[in-house]
Image (cartoon, rainbow, N blue to C red; front, side, top):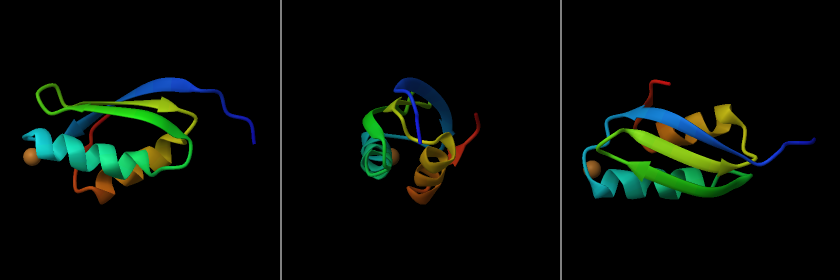
Length: 70
Ligand SMILES: [Cu+2]
């Protein structure tokens, strides 16, 4: 499997505070291929750097209890 490192931004609904950001960073950080995660509850942006599959990152965000809208 070949996959290049890239940076992808996900639009996430439901984050309301720093704890939400931490929950997502922890959950997404465990996905294979994720090198770095940032989450911003004000903008709803979750930015993931690495080679992880988009579907796996979206599943991790849902597992953390949040909804991916784009
Ligand atoms: Cu919160």
